[in-house]
Amino acid sequence: MIELQGITKIYKMGSQTLEALRGVSLKIGKGEFISIMGPSGSGKSTLMNIVGCLDTPTGGRYFLDGKNVAGLTFDQLAAVRNRKIGFVFQNFNLLPYSTAWENIELPMLFDGKNHRKRKERVTELLQAVGLYDWREHRPSELSGGQQQRIALARSLANDPPILLADEPTGNLDSKSGQEIMDILMRLWKEGRTIVMVTHNDEIAAKSQRVIRLFDGQVVPERTA
Amino acid sequence: MNATLPRFFWNEYRKRRKKTALITFALFWGTLSILLLMSFGSGITTQFKVAFSGLGETLIMVYGGQTSLPFEGLAKGRRIQLYPEDIDYLKERIPEIGRIVPESYTYLQVSANGKEINRNIHGTTDEFSLLRTQIPQMGGRFLDADDVAQGRKVAFIGWQVAKDLFGGAEVVGREIVINRIPFTVIGVLKEKTQNSMYNGPDAEQIYLPINAYRQIDNSRRLNQIHIQPREASQSKLIESRVRTLLGRKYRFSPDDTYAVSFWNTIENAQESEAIFKGIETFLGLVGALTLLIGAVGVTNLMYAVAKERTKEIGIKLAIGARRRVIVQQFLLETLFIFAKGTFWGFVTAFNIVHLIRLIPVSYDSIGIQSYLLRPEFSLQIFLTNMVIVGILVFLSGIFPALRAAKSDPIESLRYE
Ligand SMILES: Nc1ncnc2c1ncn2[C@@H]1O[C@H](COP(=O)(O)OP(=O)(O)OP(=O)(O)O)[C@@H](O)[C@H]1O
Ligand SMILES: [Mg+2]
Picture (tube, rainbow over the protein chains, first blue to last red):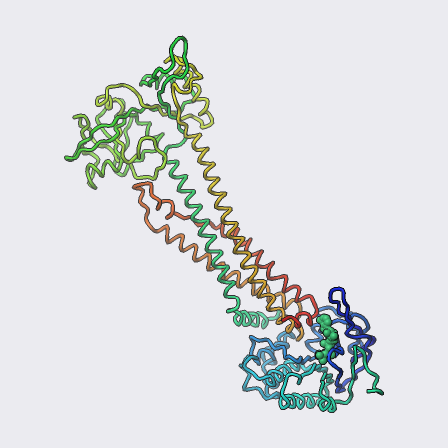
């Protein structure tokens, strides 16, 4: 489903260059639940952003469902992000002026779904994350855990087969983190492919497979 | 674009309204101040032109003088005076003359209605009113050809004279006495603005048919001759012909510019034209500078808001907004803010201008109010202003938005 071949990412800052990824190759199959671990600065977020089509690699090839992502236009990539990949950020990235309801509804609006469909789906998602009563609140009026649940609901709006989460519990207390993990486990069991970055071994232990990054490279599993 | 997106755009605009209120206000204020500035400027220019044209149109006035050059054995310093015969003498010899009108005047006591005042009394002909815009008030008239030919004892008086002698009462048909000779008032000059004059304001003058005037002043001397050229372009030619012909008659050199003197309103008109141009250029410059300051302000605000929105654009891109949606939203929002600000600026300026114009202006005196209370609203100024401000606003806003909508979403997301 996801196949990376020798992905590199080089950041240029003035005269300095920084190799955040130095040839990452990996395959992730449909329905897998994968954790990505590694020390800070090892390139986990960089990798996730590339997989999530938020960023473009400097080198290497990325096949999504057998299609080379490099060949997609800006708007085709937008469509991939809209329908195929849900993304959960460490810092939520909710629209500050919009209510919980509106935030969740937005991806469907961009997909051109009609009012009835949107209403049904937002209601369903709000109930699934247990925040239906908070639908008219803005992000600033919600706790971190609540915000992340809204963000999670938003990422699921168009029912994407892949869910990417970059340290989704990183900014949360353990109880809220646990709630997020419970939802993720449920989503995986429903058949979604889940890739999650985490620093927490306990959380990583719940996944099927752990990919370790070190200094922009995948650490071979034997030594992991 | 599907139908739900505009509503979403509208919602987002409303949420952000407080943040953009400053831009809306800046646009409102800029539009208002430029429109008012230009309206008042244009009004002042127009009033200025009206006031200048109070002194007839193209007109040459000829006065006597003193010779400054010796001529054919005659010493310099001789006095040259004009006489009634000069009218026909010049008219017969200079075909370029359209109208020629004599004028004599003297300062005398006038009594009527038990009051006595001193005023300038003029003797002239009926054509005077054609050269010097003497419009009578309702119910009266200026001197006519018969008055002049028969030397009728009638008088045309300024509105101030009428007020001073008779108060507000009906004046036409009443009698005024000058040098013990009674004259019947046949008309009163209508009030007008005038800032170009040679003998005190028109409001204060009294006009008699020249032959009747002779009975109160028997000097026969003309104070001046008014000439209206057939064509304005011939005024210089007429001047030199008049000087040559009078020189032949009264024996002075055609090069002697002091023997007779001229006052040429055509030259003056050219001069005032230059003044108007000056005023207009000045106003245009002030307007342009105001516009520039306003535009810099608005551009700055717009840019700040657009940058602030970069992260939001990043979020929208991350959850699948196409580029078109981002740009459309931005354009619509900018258009709306722009339209709202300039619309209210326009409406406010329009109303202020028209309210001010409702204030009645008295032309009794040459007052500042006739200049300040007659602003002129110009749609052209408004449109020019709109186009320039509009372009600046869109350029200042569109670049950050376009840049955000072109790069990887992560670039915008990182933006704090
Ligand atoms: N936009 C950028 N410009 C320059 N360097 C960057 C940029 N983004 C990331 N980097 C660098 O690339 C390297 C990898 O960053 P990345 O965010 O992928 O690490 P990470 O593994 O997610 O770390 P953390 O656990 O702290 O989130 C780091 O050295 C980081 O400083
Ligand atoms: Mg990271």
